[in-house]
Amino acid sequence: MAYSGHGNRILVGFVILICGMAACNGPQRSPTAATASVAKARADLLQMPPELSGRNPVEQGLAYIDVVNELQAESSNPEERHFRVKTGSVFSARGWAFDDKRKTAPAVWLELVSKSSGDRIFFPSRRTPSKELAEGFHYPWAGTANFTVVVEQANIPPGTYEATMFQADPDLLIKTPFYSVKRITITVERPD
Image: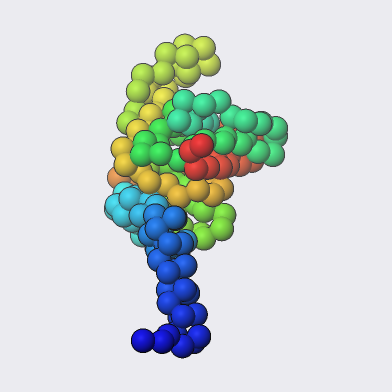
């Protein structure tokens, strides 16, 4: 039985395709399919919390972010304090925030807004004792001004985010400016 030249080329092409797929461990996936599991933060973090929803914030108080994922800021100047962190399952931040007009330390929410997509990610926090602010700055009412954010399985996509601090209590929603800088940004990168 004789094979035609055209049939041989098809057979050779098919063999090359099969070998190529085997060499690269199977069919190639599009970047969208390959990264779909990390394309969005954890779904509940993308929802505006009820404590913030439908309220008009006033701008007052002061806030500061000391560390993100236990790393100090990469750079800091009067315009911007910038953190660079690796993406991973845990997102953490520590800092302080208070309302100096009412001399209170309401519940804190950290919002990150993606500079590329506009996605908003909301992180709840836990208040912790703040001896430094209470004693060092003579703000006895700021005894719980420190906050800690620790979110497991946050799944934050790589990119640059601008941070916003909110303090919320039943009477008032406060958008809190940052102490000594105009903005705080966080660049999230893929792990090495």
